[in-house]
Image (cartoon, rainbow, N blue to C red):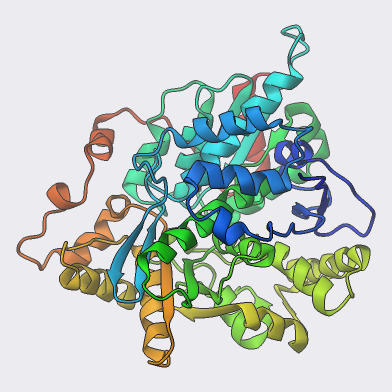
Length: 507
């Protein structure tokens, strides 16, 4: 039973926020990210007691460790979980598939928008609705609380957020995305939704520009108070929490596949904003027997550079490189701040939360002022004991899509982000000691149909290959004939975005 409270990564003051506070607020007023005051430990016999649980049953056990039953009683939490995953096409929610000996794919794309973010955002959308309904009980129309969700997307967050929040009472959704930097299907998924509470802003800029605008909006106290701004980006703690379930579920699935039970299990995660792999870190710290968490980056490689040098730095002269895996095209990984908080507390401040917040705040200020900071070697070494990393080029991304298709007996097709993870898996497998029983679970973060251009580039030379027949689901095929609703923002300017939001909300 949880008595968990939450705090901001950047605070040097005592805090004790509830789960509802952090979900509905999103970003902390000081610019930091909310995290739990402590990471709960798993029950002593969880490996035996949980191994046969369904995805939903596992989700309940994990979420209950973080959410006080006084905030969400058991019955309501079970209802929220059931509702959130009833929209998935697989009854396993996140099944694993064997790619080759010692390498498994964790398919996270069976939700309504064919992307891993559905696992979290279906749940987050239902949380918003649950808390608002409770807050607005017995209130008149003029007294009702509303929430204005403002999010930035490099492709998949936007559609997953929209599908999680469309049509929900007292919720307005505004999604910012960089013009021309997401795939056509991703844009169609967002902009063809007809619900009146959904609004898509195509911003002339990069994903980092969009994310900066969202952070500035959260930092505008007057605007925030008036419109009650909420977050769906992975800055919202509930997203990280919901994603922990599939690390446990895939671990138990894999154990059932293996003959030997002493395997070292490594998770390989395509990483941009660091939220997906951060969920794995929480699972590891709770007690899940994970040998390594491996960060797979594309050519926007701030995370790989940090792991190798200890310097966390924007490549300001180059900027964001547009790659074949656009959801990972970032300069700064927002969620890395949460990991840094724990690493600072463990290695520098001896468990002092207040000093940890103070030091991290100074590092974030350095990052803002000079575009970089350097972490002490002892902190980097602790990070390396848990994490490893690789950088994957566009050329290798295409090669791996081709290799997987040509070697798998079912001509399995992976999207470019998943390919970054599989390429990384191949490299680590090549370095393994042949005597070791090491198994890899590589996270498949999106359905390949969402990235037709790159997939076709890799596979068009195969005579038997057909994108429409082999890859494209009918549901996505139908999107191209639907009318789009888009608001264009001609420059990445926070005031222009706020004005558009104000014009639409009309209050």
